[in-house]
Image (cartoon, rainbow, N blue to C red; front, side, top):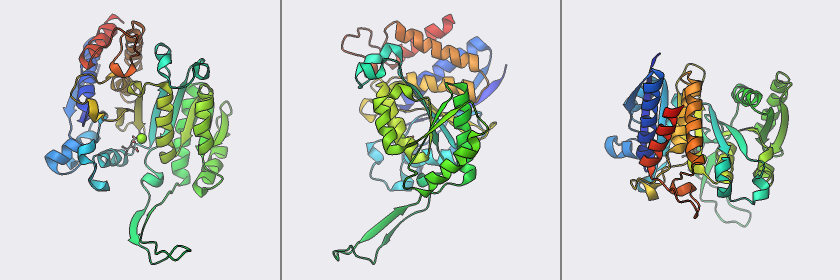
Amino acid sequence: MAVFKIAVIPGDGIGPEVTRSTCEVLNKVAQKSGNGFLFTEVSAGGIAIDTFGEPLPEKSLQIAKDSDAVLLGAVGGPKWDDLPGRSRPEAALLGLRKELALYANLRLAILFPELKCASPLRPDLVENGVDILIVRELTGGIYFGKRGLEKSEECLSDGTPKGMEAFDVETYSEAEIERILRVGFTSAMQRRKNLTVVDKANILETSRLWRKVTERVASEYPEVSVEFMYVDNASMQLLRRPGSFDVIVTSNMFGDILSDEAGMITGSIGMLPSASLGTPGTPGMYEPVHGSAPDIAGKGIANPLATILSAAMMLRYSLGLPEEGEKIEKAVGAVLRQGYRTTDIASSSDANVLGTKEMTEKVIEEYEKL
Ligand code: IPM
Ligand code: MG
């Protein structure tokens, strides 16, 4: 029995609705398991810009650092779209990742059997199911590299002055590559033992270093079969044979792009959870893969399941309560089997379309039975 400190960042758009739902589920977990969760609400993202003039106030960061885990809804929205880079809501996400040293981002793309028809792919392409874990490097690469904007004095070959010139640099060290690869290999060992390393080694020096390090680390995991794949090919193969992927490990930018693609293949981005982890013993951050969905914010129709499933990952990876995490996943499965849907995952024939609150109640009801 323990009391865990959870920093809750509702954020923007549908973030507050889905985190509220998830805290209700966690309260039920506390009640049934005898553990306690101490929630501290923390301001970050667009709402923090409006209230405090910055996306990630120091106090918010401190509370996150002092917690056992962070639960985040979503940040961003059209209201803040015109702000420059470092003042945008998204800067809160990048700041949290950097400051909490969350170098490993685990994103699941699972085609829930009950939601097969939600996939935009032809049924024969997904008939054997899809269950992909994308391990994305999260604190390095081009998203954190040197960048700049300056006036160029040069001209194009036809004499046109170049004008302003911007650059973003991709950098990876062996140590950074090795620690994320290890997350990929250990995850593969716990799953189907297939690892795909996605890169652009025909062009990029960083990718060639990824391959070299992979070859060295792979010798420690002889049971894992490793395949290298160029990112352009990977984006194609994901559509052609999604069922053949197990774990994909890749750089920050490629992982950002491929995880959206893989999420879409399942047709239920509203269902997909994620975990961002640092070294063991430091707080992990858990958030749904979907964004802030400003178009449906405040309407009470957002799908809370991705955040609820993210809390299940939190119980497993940060709080040492894997059985409780599994029960949440089972409860979600049971609710889907009974045919309950939120609008984003409902097909025209689904009769039991629920709002955020009702869906949350159903999950709690099922959890109670386990
Ligand atoms: C994500 C998002 C973020 C990212 C943005 C909002 C900074 O797209 O978590 O995938 O690119 O990492
Ligand atoms: Mg993204």
